[in-house]
Length: 222
Image (tube, rainbow, N blue to C red; front, side, top):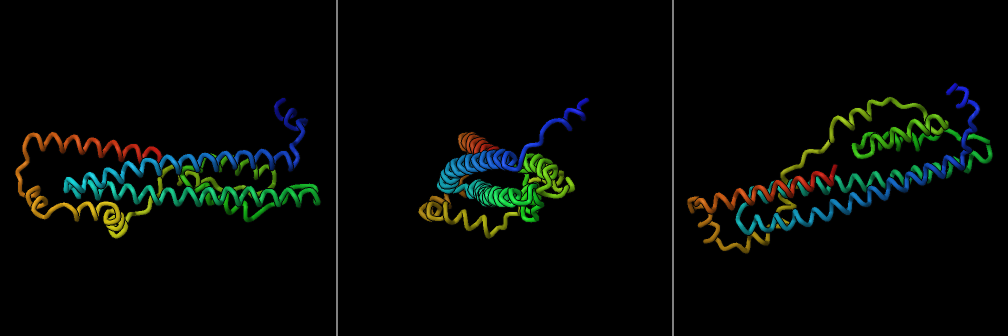
């Protein structure tokens, strides 16, 4: 019975499909913009924490936070790339519909297929683009794709390794001046002084605060 209903149900015309797809693509772009703003807001907290760690001469914590900052900036760059590809898909779909008015049906687009496939490899976009892929395949815009890309994207974040050079560059830019302003005598004294119980408690508090900052940044990146 369901198959019969599906046969009898009128298929949406190309213009209807385009409007629906473009509306959802715009929503995905807004979601990306919101995520970028959230990440950049948390990055300001991380930068502040790096400076505070440098003032304490806790360069280990400062470097760990700088590594998180490098990861976040790479994530933001990928999100900007994702948004650009979403806009390109919307533009190419518009062109496909314009052609459909002449030939009477939607034609396959190699460019759209390529961009959808690329976005399916992005962890944040994998599930959404899988849905788009099914709908566009059914409408004849792209050919059916293997779902291995989706599985790979969901199984791993595919985060590039941060090089020491990148981390040191960020650390120097944010904390270099702060660390340089710390008197040499103070730095030596901090290194030579035996840790007291108060110092130990303060270190625990600092570590807990740092972990909280890193966790917040990881949440907005995912």
